[in-house]
Length: 455
Ligand SMILES: [Zn+2]
Image (cartoon, rainbow, N blue to C red):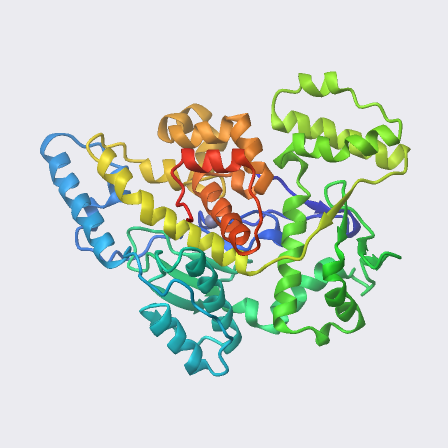
């Protein structure tokens, strides 16, 4: 769904990862920062597992059996809420200061944030990062929010900074897992250098007279420009990568990920049309708006626009640039916290309302998406079957208006309702912290799906 991004200067397609679990934020290597629903099969901690949400999904049940299953499911949801989804009552405003020792950071997570379990193997920097991000989310919610049941620190073997375990069957439901690889120098340095230097070590960005860093190649036909706010980090990086702090490396990594996301014209071609209009006119290149209008789907429009941009570049020698802001690694945690709030707010309602109907794909219908293996398989195989199984998700994926709204945030927000909620939530937290504004249609769509609000 997200397609394959290519960065032209490396002259090879960034291969889509071979998804073994239905749990990826995005398919380009550069922008997978968030791991999703961790649906891998594991031993179930609940003795009535067989009657739980997922197993039930595969069965065709009638009569007495149905009653028994409903009972099991109720019990399951009850336990889930009792143990895992408890709204916290933290101070309205928490002041965060980076801890100086690991013990201090652990105490903060446990005693101030109320996280029951914190892994022992955390590094100070990683735990400070997690704590700070959670504090941000807590503060915008004035202390009333769903807090992860545990903070884990594992090597995820994925290009993923963090994920929240959203598998309701699992005893680790509601845990926030941080990828320890990200806090190891080697991994981060490799990820960054892949996009900032070529194979021979030559810089792939050059400093302009305006002190911005301009990409010498293209990403999806566009020429990325790193805004001035990134110049100090880029200066340091190109002087000597070893000079960067871990925080600066994380920032660069996130910035590169954002660059790939934002360069996707197919996410919102109408928005790209607006951005390009003036340049198109200035260069006397006639874009046929009539022809553009005949393209009915986002995909067709994006294809048309890409051709226009290509022509501008090749014939008018006028590449279209895209400015890239400094990435914020905290946003990954905001996104994950968004999933948790969404579950807290909506899981119970949906279960209770729909239990009787035995609409057994209701979880995927609401929280599945095209980054999830099971959903994606059906989507690729048979759209009608997909529509039957996941009617709401199908509507979201095929409604061009919803897709354009979601595309204003990111291409990932387009892949499913749950991802749209989490992406918007991250945006809302960030906007609240930095007095940002969010477009009305984004909020309207968010409300349609009952996204968790921030007051
Ligand atoms: Zn997500």
